[in-house]
Every structure is written in C-alpha cells, then in structure tokens.
Image (tube, rainbow, N blue to C red; front, side, top):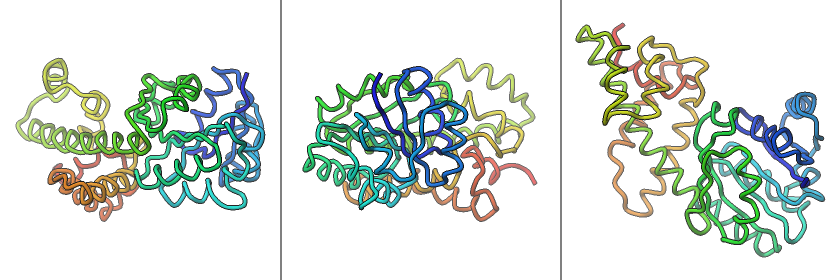
Length: 291
C-alpha cells in the first residue's frame, strides 16, 4: 500500500482517484477546489481530504492531478500552497490534465530542480473510460520516473505508454484531438446525408461500423447525432475548443497545417453561439440537421 494524493475531482478525476483506493488499496488523500466535492468523494470511497494541494502532497509517494488548463496546473502546482511545496525529494508528480507541452516542460524542469519526478500524462477515453478504468494514457517524461509511476497509473488505464521526453504526452493528446475532430465532422455529415436520403440509420451503422469506416466515435456517438440530442453524454464543446486551441497554437509553432481542425473549431464556435457550450462534441450535427 502506497500513500498517494489526487488533485482535482472533476468528471474524470473523481472516478480515477476512486480506483486508486478501491482497486489499488492505497492510502489516498484528495484535494478539490470545491471542498464539498472532496467531502463527497471521501464519503463514497473513504480516504482523506486536504484543504490545499500542499497539504494533500505532504508525506505521499506520488501525486496525481487532473485539472482544467495551463493556468489551473500552475495554480495547483506552484506557490506556498502548491503541490511542489509539500512534496519531498524522490517523489513523483503526474499531471493528467490536457494542457500545453509548454507547461509540461516547465513543470518538469521545476520539479527536477527539486529532485521530484514529473510525468505529463493526459488521458483519452472520456468519462466512461475513467469510471471503468479503461483510459488510454499517453505519457512524457524520464524513463525511470515513468517506470515507478506506471503501476499506479495502470489502476485506471487500458493502455499506458511512455511516448518520449517531457511534453510528449501532451503532444500525443493533441494528435488524438486533431483526429477526433475530423472523425466527428465526417460522422455528422455522413449521418445527416443518410437521414436526408431516407435511409434507416441504425441499419446503416450496423453495416459500416463493421468495415473501414469503423471508429470509437461512430459506435458511441451516432445515437445522439441521429436524435439531435446532445446533453449528458460526456465531453463538452467548451473542453474540445480548449483542446483544439492548444493544438492550433502548437501547430503555429511547428509549422503543421491543420485546415480541417481549424474549420471544425469554428463549427464548434457556432455551436457555442447556439447555446451548446456544455453539449457533447457530437453536437456538430446541430449545424447540419433539419430545423
């Protein structure tokens, strides 16, 4: 049994932290910006809660975190009450936030100065993947640090792979989001075409999902696209636009052309303008469906 901390109990972090205790049997302390959410987690799973990231990180071997964006990462990691202030030399900080490669390299360098290991480890698989412990975790960092952290991460992972050095995990998550953006737009256009052509979409999906067009997005997002209902299915438009913004910013630095991702990002901006900020990413169909 190890002493661990988890910072950030959103739709992903809440069940991920639960796996550390229930599946791993570890001694887990949690921190959340809303103390009520932390208290709810303790009531459901056990463990302890802390008032600050620093307090949660004191005396533990590994600190995992999953927050919102670069600014949130910095606010939880740095400062008098930040996680690094409470961590000891030889411990490990793992960041599951989808953030920039810039902040990943920055935190890695700062942690290394203090003798603390760091892994940037964004995840894919959505809320269902977090709940079921079936996430894909793409990691960046040092080999020896990753090797120590992996048994903990495997408690909620279907796949956990070290891609490369600091920032490589975040760059891989950008690839993931670029691919998903194109898949969702293609799926929305195809289903809209089929429905306007009078086809039975359930039968269409039954056939094409067994061929070259098959994807996780198709199998999990076609019903809400067909029904044009986008509430309560997981990954929100606001979050996707945040992620695509990171991708486009990185592409401006490395010279990659992202014409489709940029276009889909603007489609999502239109969805936001229609009141769909918290709709699921399948809401691209809203721009195509009949009134």
